[in-house]
Image (cartoon, rainbow, N blue to C red; front, side, top):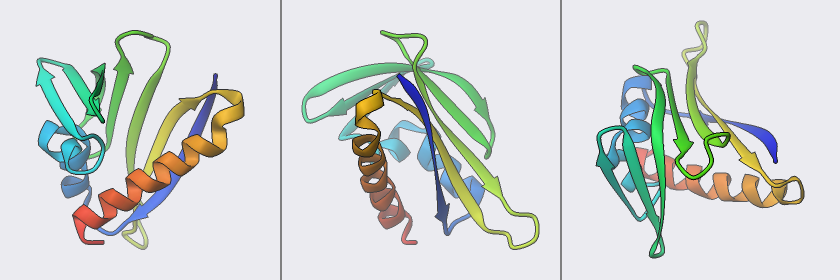
Amino acid sequence: MVKVQYEYVINCSPKVLYNRLSTASGLAEWFADDVRVQGKRYTFVWEGSEQTAEMTLRKENRLVRFTWVDDENLYFEFRISQDELTGDVALIIVDFSEEDEEEETRELWNTQIADLKHVLGS
């Protein structure tokens, strides 16, 4: 497994973006078909299959990390960064990919972020 990182400019406030990254209703709008939360455990549903992750890190309007329950070494993370001069908001995604699947992982995130931008109207 290799760690990958992607950065996307998102035209919205960190607070609005954080809500879409950290709540079941926000994540269900763009990330998964359905999201169920029980405590810190988030169950993501894609085309009928489920995967469960635990929210292991969160900093209001700045960072959310989900660690997969079936492999505690793997996680995905959403970091929000705002440029002090321009005010531009960037979403930085940290994820893991099989070494020979990095291009597929990038394409998957590009599709997901396109959905997110559509939901945000940006």
